[in-house]
Length: 110
View 1 (tube, rainbow, N blue to C red):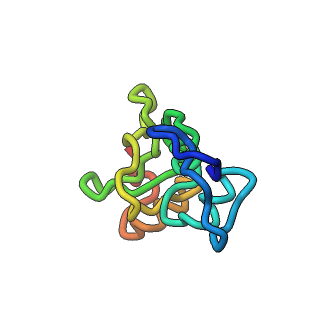
View 2: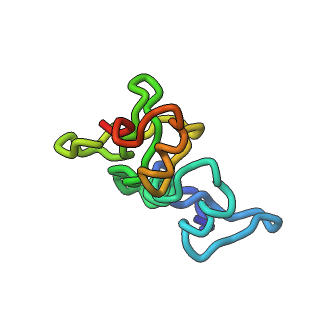
View 3: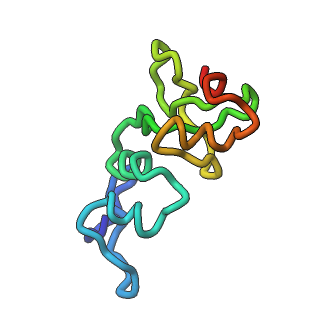
């Protein structure tokens, strides 16, 4: 946040330089400036909130399966939180399974 004084461990980053773009909401900043981070994760971290996953799908390359970006062990398709900005997230299971084109779609998920 653009604010008068830096807040150690808080949301305030001090006064913004005149050449930096300012956004009304952290979500908009995340979308425009930090495209390599999942928007939901960036927004939660910007607001010092916990992040339980985006519920989007990603390929777990160790298992060769598509799993959900979540932190709910009771959900069968939950693969844990996607680690790293290089993990490509997909809106749908079908879109994710397209990355594993050599597999039958019914075998694509956990």
